[in-house]
Length: 68
Image (cartoon, rainbow, N blue to C red):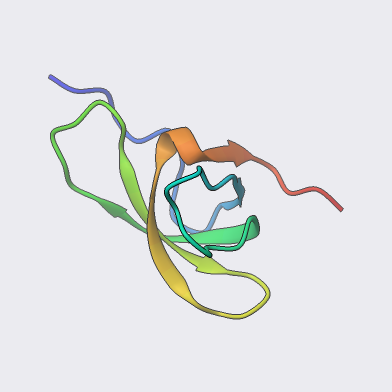
């Protein structure tokens, strides 16, 4: 059985995009929804705190807390 999601809905996190994430801005996001998947790297729908855009990111691209 795969591990549970580490982060919860409503939690603020910092998104750290990788080299293949295009122009997705790093920084503060709020978790909107935990997404079901069978992979080890859990997915979440998150909302950018600055521009309001939503995107789907993996747990490995996140860290808890927000700078500043």
